[in-house]
Length: 270
Image 1 (cartoon, rainbow, N blue to C red):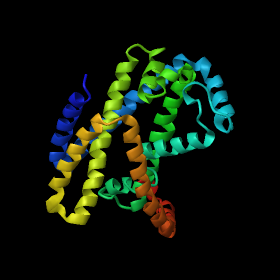
Image 2: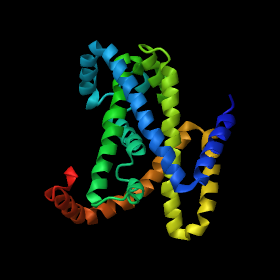
Image 3: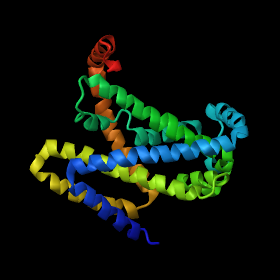
Image 4: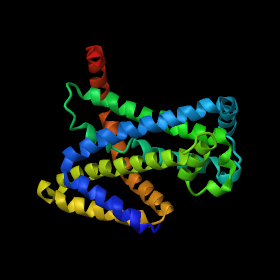
């Protein structure tokens, strides 16, 4: 199937959602995100239970290779520890948005009694995304042994699907569905982030131009190479993280004060 064909389909669907505004974006996201996480985690847990005997060796592998100065084998030939850490950090940031300053744009519209409530929710989001979803994926890949196969080096999705398929029938279909839902929800979520920034700079009456531009870029992203997409995402995330992290240093006192106020007042139980 030519890349432009699914690209057109996704572009049309994304465009229809975006034209509905924030209410439609929120409605779609609140249905997609929990569903895809539950589906993926249940599948991952089933796989791990079916291969529980491989878990000790998997953890031993993680510990032994974590700080090894030598390159790993198979698909990771030539990758130094520094390169692995750099790649892990960049992929992690793309996944959980920690430190980018993007998630607060969504948290800012929440109707809560205290700002620390959304801070707690934000921490939980990173926990679910990184500690649960990403760690489960790592466990699946490492316990399967397929991570040493160079043929899967170019596609993490194919590697995850192949690893799950060693124990679960139709796992490739599950991974495909989850990957689509993750990607689609990310598209509409990031569109909202950019839209609010665009609105701040140019006014709400010009938001429609941003939505049209974003929809067009969805089509462009579907036909360019995956390494190029990763490179662009990593570069632009760096541009966001740098000023945001500087701002966070100046806000440490405020965050500390609000957090203490929230927990000392007992609001966390309400």
